[in-house]
Length: 473
Ligand code: ADP
Ligand code: MG
Image (cartoon, rainbow, N blue to C red; front, side, top):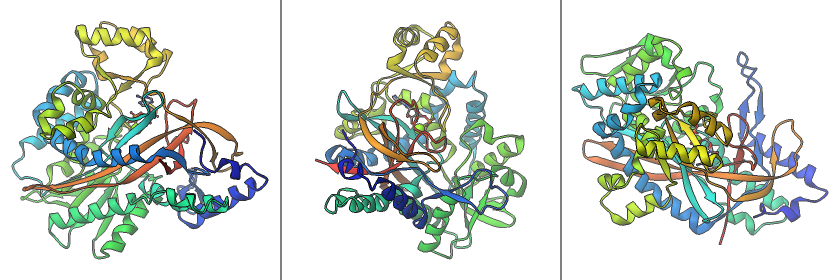
């Protein structure tokens, strides 16, 4: 497939189009802080982006959006299934200290008497369009700190603008709106209402350096637009550890202020817990009756090993009664293999050693840059032969995604036509109270596009750039 509008873009006005697109990005808040400017916080650059949107078959896009409500329900029910999560992660936690520490919190929370006032899950299911089967296959389900919604929400505006610049006025309508930012802000406000205490605050938990500051502000300002009276706070896990306490009835209080919703935009990597104070902060929040996004159960439900366990025969059916919904969910799954000790795990490891190019080897880590590909898979699996530590990884079928040609625009880099592949994420939000699910929505999408020869698509590491779908029949 070719990226939309390339015949019109590949002309002598390309440089002018690129400059205008960059300026459009600046004037519409598609910007990020410069890493070195942590003190003054005055300098920004534009987000990296594709000059034109990427073609996606409309019926496949709609199908994923429909399946999102099924995934919302599935992941909520898994997050509440203490026995399932503990059982699945048993073989991982022996060798993985980070997951062990998270599970310890889960055990403590499971024993507490005061129930949370509700739950909020904001998740994102990521997919690649498989070039052989011409269908979207799921890469992972993110259940904590799902980001990039603010940029994604503005990309349709940028792409409609560049298409019109190229004279493609009618085609500009084929770029769908994206309610991702609004959807996240609305869900946080709904959760705050469910908590039911007008003076209580929404707390966004972030890293101390907060390089995603502008993304977080987009969310804060959107909440402010919906209801300016909601007190909004932002602090690190360490700050919570030092400044928070719990009242007798398990309210979370920080500097005397009650917290209604704890919204994690950190907490998913071992590096985010430098000392015991960060762990103390996480535990205090989890032990409180505040609504966490996500709860510790929701966080653990998003680990790679749980993802693999959900794909085992009969597991989706434990949670979802509707047979059509079960099919919608299972249809997106890649083949996933456990590497637990035993003949099945040994067989999976042999598959990976024999044909490493056909797989991805994944540890239980989030945030990009952790997976192994190609010959590294073979080496790792040979090194782990006979060791129970092998269970800290899962093996996954490698998707060979559809390739497109397009221009990716990055700050200070020359723009060239390249072969690219994309990854589509669908956001979902679920709120529950004691009556069960009271709010379940599909809230927009994220399209990230990377050079075809890169293994991982990461916006933060700079391999991938922002994109948006151009829906084709
Ligand atoms: P993380 O939690 O680090 O984001 P992911 O499972 O999303 O982990 O993997 C990171 C990246 O690796 C993905 O964005 C994708 O580009 C690539 N990747 C992961 N799984 C596969 C797969 N099965 N086939 C092809 N590429 C994959
Ligand atoms: Mg990912």
